[in-house]
Image (tube, rainbow, N blue to C red; front, side, top):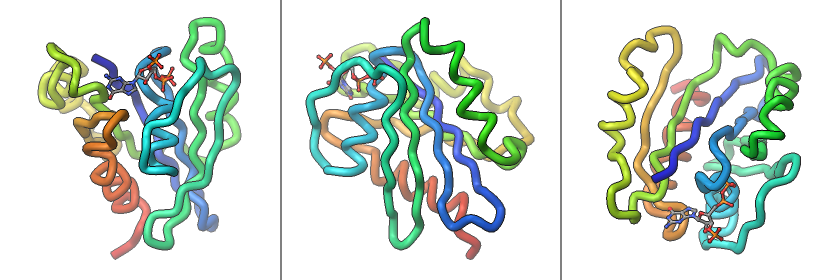
Length: 151
Ligand code: G3D
């Protein structure tokens, strides 16, 4: 079972929307980032520092930072938040990855475990997915886009 947290930030006046992927080491962050880009699983190595890629979803541009999750790197997470504008406007997407692994928690179980219902100040969503096959990832991108595109 793995899951990770994506903080999605809309930068006022900027057409590129910033996304920070954070989560435990080995949760599948890098696998998913490259699934978003290439639509296939790529071989990953532990992230040292960060990976950054631009992802475009139907003319909406996201700059996605995949931050290494190893304990030694977690102290640097704050520096990625510093250069973003108002976190108060962030939306939170939680990916319930590794759904193919027997015994992985469902999206509903994760939602209850993290008491997400208590979050009333930010939009949030839990999406079940599999980084290896890409299942659920289109729904992730659609939700991200829905948070930044004004209908
Ligand atoms: P990280 O960037 O969060 O540290 P990685 O994690 O993307 O490097 O992935 C860690 C391992 O989990 C990789 O396996 C990767 O293939 C695997 N993984 C990612 N997503 C899934 C998934 O949905 N299901 C399963 N079963 N495995 C997944 P290796 O063996 O290369 O370490």
